[in-house]
Image (cartoon, rainbow, N blue to C red; front, top):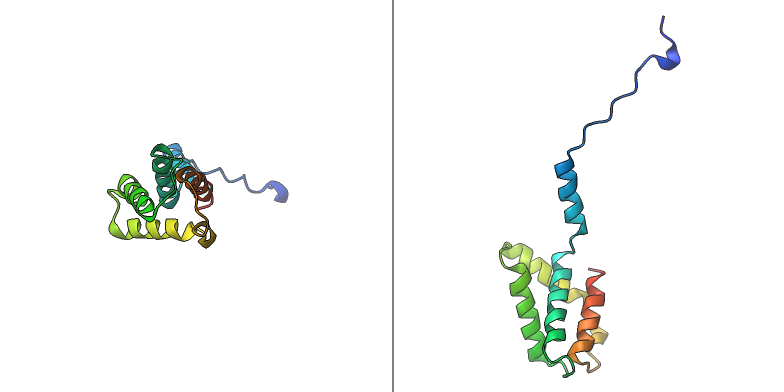
Length: 115
């Protein structure tokens, strides 16, 4: 006669696929494409004339270079979504004050952490 408290053996834990776990950990640790774009744009602004004021043309060039560096090889829909997310992350008040390229780089890196 079986003891009703011990009638069933505990269920064995399912085997874990360590390769899948490693891939998932890597995916979760990788910043989003939008964050990578903002960081790439910040790198460009910080590297090229960081003490100059950022012009519209300078911003367009930094963003285009970031787009080419980060999004090349992704499907168009994925690239467009990442670009839109990166642009939406910029606050409207950032455009009001004149800032140097280096200051913009700091702001972009800060924003990239939240995207």
